[in-house]
Image 1 (tube, helix red, strand yellow):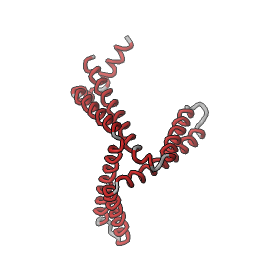
Image 2 (image 1 turned 135 degrees about the vertical axis):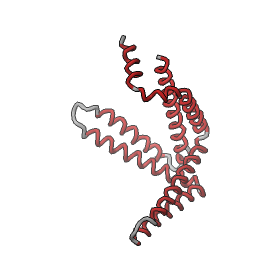
Image 3 (image 1 turned 45 degrees about the horizontal axis):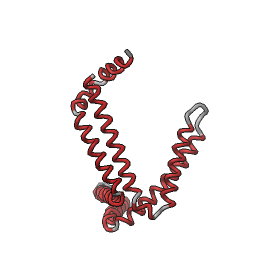
Image 4 (image 1 turned 180 degrees about the vertical axis):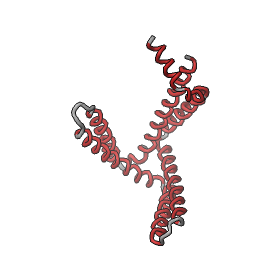
Length: 193
């Protein structure tokens, strides 16, 4: 009785999901594509690292162009120069990622490692500041894992810059694929119920 009630409640409570339910096959297919791309990235983490660096480079060039365009919208001359210089810096940095992707990967990996260490420390500090009765231990565990991941990356830097970004990209694609497949199959199950 409970499971029937739950299915009908979920199905009846979310009529806006009907278009998604109709496309559940496409959602599963998207998940499979993500999964395949993730396994390809994990099979060649060095190439995936270069690909992720190129994506960052493209984003920096687009952001730089947007900053340059924004510079012409600023009225005062001092701010115009500041916006323009910032935009040019982004464009130059974006182009530099294409000129030397391994150096860019090394810099990005260094920034990632430091960011993970700082994030881990902040989570641990925040967890110990939580009130009694809150599940602070999970936050501490998360902080310790994040800190250790950053420390491992930095301990092996600059060698880790060849594979870390590609490894993270591959893992992210695999988990995204599993998530999309799970969503599509879940929608299909509720469609037939």
